[in-house]
Image (tube, rainbow, N blue to C red; front, side, top):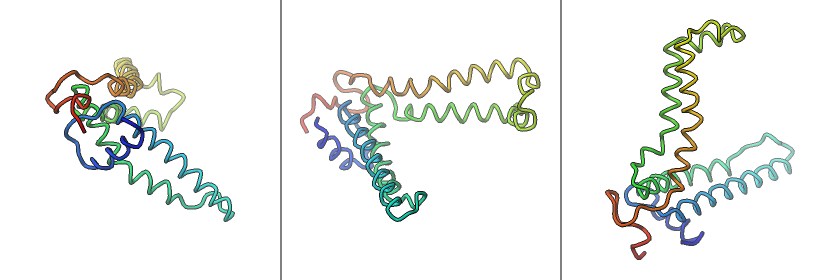
Length: 170
């Protein structure tokens, strides 16, 4: 799949969270989003600098990001399907962030950090610190795990989410 085919496919499947997406489809569309975001930000910076307001409005990049958010999410969802995983695995880092934050709030770690940042390690008990340390390691690893899953080759043949995109004619 070429760059333009991938972009067209992802916009055509705007709200399609079923089926599978090949690696090339997902990564070409990711590149499009990255380049488009940089281009929109550069254009906004130039326009704002021209008018003498370096902190001016960011409507252009906001509109671009809004227009590509759902297609990017659905492409990632379908890419996870292509590797044989549920699209929900795409949210794994957010689940970890929520879990770590909830545990830290439940144990009072945020209160300790807010009132006594220098003595936070002494104020928290060792079990809480051990759990938070392990949780932080998982938090650091989780985005890389999702990235690893997104780079995996397609499962050969059909899987629970549909036929292999390399074996189906467009």
